[in-house]
Image (cartoon, rainbow, N blue to C red; front, side, top):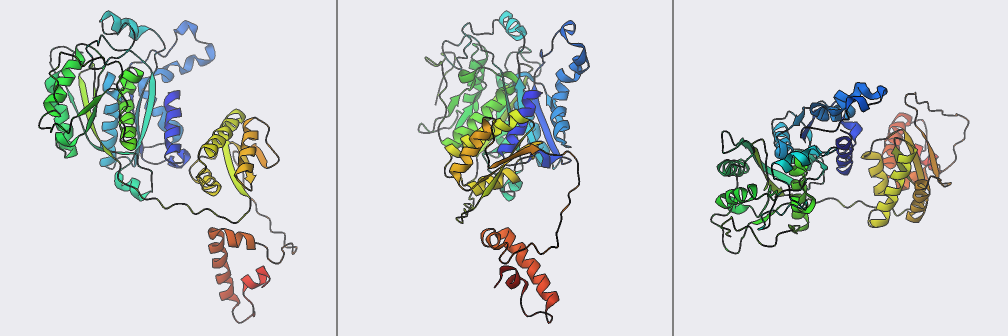
Amino acid sequence: QRLMLEASWEVLERAGVDPAGLRGKPVGVFTGAVGSDYRPEPGNVPDDVEGYLMTGALGGVLSGRISYVLGLEGPAVTVDTTCSSSLVALHLATQSLRSGESSLALAGGVTVMSSPGAFVGFSRQRGLAPDGRCKAFAATADGTGWSEGAGVLLLERLSDAQRNGRRILGVVRGSAVNQDGASNGLTAPNGPSQQRVIRAALANAGLAATEVDAVEAHGTGTSLGDPIEAQALLATYGQGREAEQPLWLGSLKSNLGHTQAAAGVGGVIKMVMAMRHGVLPRTLHVDEPTPQVDWTAGAVEFGASGTNVHVILEQAPEQTHEEPVEDETPGPLPLIVSARGKAGLAAQARELASFLSARPEVGLAETGRALVGTRSALSERAVIVADDRAAALRNLEALGSGEPGPDAVTGTAVESGRLAVLFTGQGSQRAGMGRGLYERFPVFREAFDAACAALDARLAGHVERTVADVVFGA
């Protein structure tokens, strides 16, 4: 639950969405998870946390916890179809968005292995590789290798994402889910069912098999499952292809192991990034292809439960973003950083300093706007006022070391309180006051002009000068 809370918060911030701004909105949470061993024996639990054992380990609470903490009021569903869990969660999330049930959706999966139980159980089935490596589709494939992980995707209807100016990384073109039914074994893969789910996903996406360029396979590295999957892929994607248009096949499990409930979302992230960069990561540990397949020549997951899912991904449409116009007028800019506590505040300052150092093309004004408009204002806060990038970096590094400089103001926000604004009425204004703001900031200029126009209309016939002339001493 903690990992999914952290990953959900991070994916929202990366998308430029303030998590606090989603409270009360129909945002769905769809999470893949397998049976959890993440709980101690009752006799080893301190008395003051005993009451949290049940809710802290229940799979159903996994999604509900995210909705509860963020105040999301769309569906909260935890899916357990073993290895296919997170892709089934993604399938359900897209359906929720298309039906209008959700306006945004978080979809992903998580696996934590806190005991050796899964290793022992799968070893008894002779399904684990002795060296712990997944040799997907290789002649030397001798079992899978377990690993842990968590991943979350933020989904929105494409038309809404474009209208809201989101940075779109990829598109879910179509998906399908089915079951093996009464097949050759509860946990054994079923080739015909795998073919059917692939064809159903292609039909849902409105695509022919030859229009798909690459498949991220289940590819666990077992001598039973890989050949069955490869034959299903050949029977669907491998037909009618020209020699110069091969189907590229790979498995992320060869790179980082089998993350079980998080395997599907990991494969989606891999393929989205591969399309963005135009490079497919190499599938490791393949000395030569398995001879059990007559090789010729999507993201897919098949669950040990018999539940199969196939998702068709598409490259994101070309987006044109207006380049932000940086203010060249010299003057201080505020950079606002916030966190839950002092340690978190220092960490946020270090992260922001690292970002600004690595991305010199991103201006301070653009950074300041993003910090205000796309981040939650948490309780521990700091405002750094900097005239230039060097000053900003210097003060951020100081704040990150726990010793704020003279250009930083730090403090803890009051949880509840009322705002009062005092106008002294003692003639403390001066001629030309506000001119710098007027010349530099369009928002201030528009508001000032609107106020002056309203006052000038009311004062017409009573005074000879405009309000702006008086304020600026013209």
